[in-house]
Length: 178
Image (cartoon, rainbow, N blue to C red; front, side, top):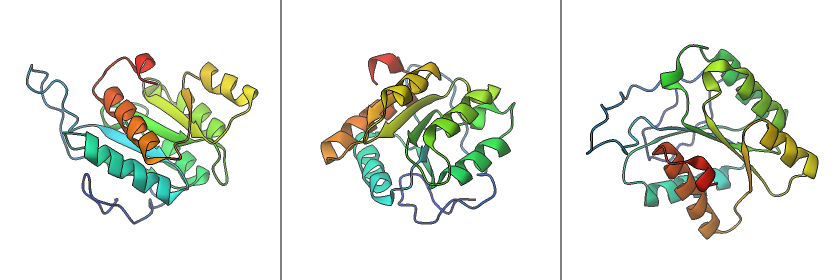
């Protein structure tokens, strides 16, 4: 279990066991709450703690609602986590995954293939981030139904990424935001 609450800095690394499902329940869809993100699970697979902290800060500044941000810091743990998830529990899966292309132990494309091979995770929006990607990598990312975008280097870039993540969590057309 991750020792954090929504919107609070998380300093502990992901344990080697799978994450516990969120205890929050989804609200019925009404005009007042249809865009609430209370059940929004955001999974970040990235080995750079500074990038994660900048993203968390940008999300806190832009999100009017609470969110759960879980972090996995290397490819081996990411694969273990994905393999340990149920193939039937769609309601506890992340709404969006931000995936670093260049991770230690296993690269982002291998992790993306594993995500797409998991039937309960086929619906999840995946945004692959990298300082650079080869043409072959970009084509493979698109073929696997994910989006590639340059990894932010400025705070304004993290604000743009946070806005995209929020739009995905609210259910807006992700093709129009990434």
